[in-house]
Length: 137
Image (cartoon, rainbow, N blue to C red; front, side):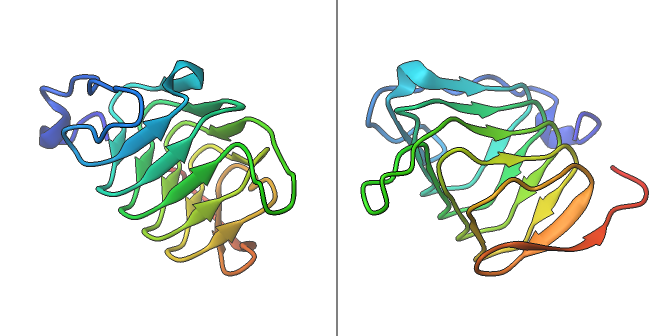
């Protein structure tokens, strides 16, 4: 993404607790949220960072995603980490304690309940690895 013209003047968005950013995504518990350089987060994505959410450099997240570091349904909790250059498709849900590996792609409308390794494509409910990426971007 570094060479893409749309990131030429990239700036870290202002993140205010419980308020939409200028790009129309929202973070709760923003004091536990870390955002990397040249990230792209789609509109109406919700991030609950109560137990920590780390989004590394050059990550892309589609619109309408949900990222949870706590779940009141099953009691799971834990830091979520999206490693450098991973891609998360629109309408995907990422559950607590999950790490998505470097350069990996998670298909749209997936439910990520377990770690996704580096350099793979994962899809589905629950998300499962369907192939390796031989030459990472």
